[in-house]
Length: 285
Picture 1 (cartoon, rainbow, N blue to C red):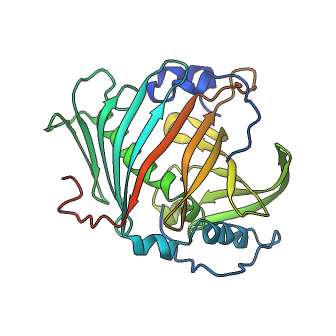
Picture 2: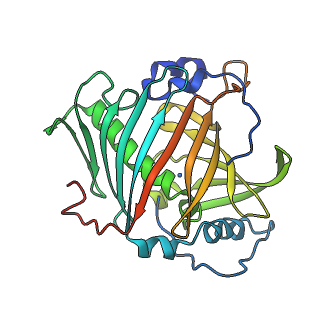
């Protein structure tokens, strides 16, 4: 890791990184795929990409999500330790990966010291940031807005993103967590195919019975975390045939390498609605 973990507290969007040890709870992020949902997908540890395809199928299938067209939901990003919250209305169009967020609260990640309504819009190429209807041109704020637009979409579509053609998958054996033995897959991305200099690395724990990713580790190069040491636990709800991660808890090791008992970040998705008829013209209305 290039930057010591304890120095990352200066990065306001990731103040939770100084947590130090994790409570055992059973729970459970560029480019598209076209996996058809099948009744009995192949699941072969000798070919880890079959496991990732089985994950996509178990979550409802990319084709089903694609046909739904778009999604809208309320997104709460919360620091339990401080009570600070980012609260946004999120909208994505699956075909173009356009991503829009309207923040009624922005106390953590983007412009936390500014007052008023904040909006971020990624059109598939670039991001526009506005505060109270006025464009924000500051490079640092724009970079954060662009990161959030792409990342929020990735987290929502993660079961399909880890099954992308740009993925390199490696089977790492098994890992036991909270009484379940998981298959462990390292997921990395070919930089030439993604066109990104920095690509996150994931180690996903797949439940061989449910084919769901209950838990995973990931890196975050944008914030200097070069190794997959951040832990995420996911819980799912079935919404119109898609298993959506509506509760996510995140943990980060402290300087001693231990994890906190309580999560540094809790994310919840509520009022999830598909097929809203969003277009480039009305996504921001």
